[in-house]
Amino acid sequence: MHTMRRNKIFFIIIFAVTHFFITNAFGDILAIGNKKAKVTVKVFSSLTCPHCASFHQKVFKSLKKDYIDKDKVRFEHHAFPLDLAALNAEKIVRCATNAETRFELLHKIYDEQKKWAVGSDINAMLIKIALEFQIKENNLKNCLLNENSQEIILKERIDAQKEYNITGTPTIYINGKKYEDKHEFKSFKRQIDKLL
View (cartoon, rainbow, N blue to C red):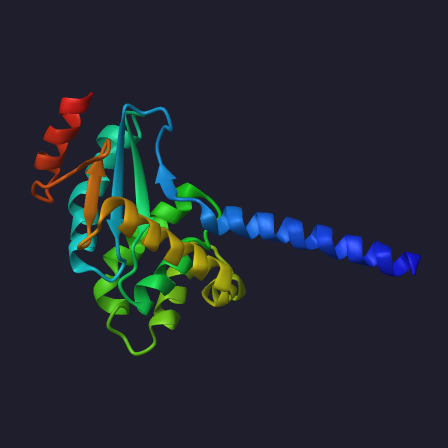
């Protein structure tokens, strides 16, 4: 009886630790940059959305170099998957263990979007991309099967819909105000500079 009680306590502790790890690993908003930066950019996007990929390629690289790396801007990627392929891509991104790698993987997924988003075996293509980032194949497969991760991502999407009334992707907010200008760095830079 005493042994059963000890085993029960052991399993409760293991469950709590595992739940804490999974929630923290998959539950954080994907963010990069100084938390105390004067400007916060929130981008709600779907990883299968061509306009999201275009924004990331045209704006994010320069934004990172000129503002994020200089602690002037904090950038948040908010998952807003529009289909199963985008949901699975989000799971793969969250499989990386740190923010820097997650953003590098996110960038690669956007760069390769035309190849993987329309293929016959999307998950295999996503795994192939992620293997370049020294994530074990077994871990990637487990991330794709992780229902907790899926629930967190879908909750993030529902919460974003409620709070920000997202009607399309990408939807961008700069310091809480919706960005309505062109998806070009020059236009984006003008908005950022006004706030610095």
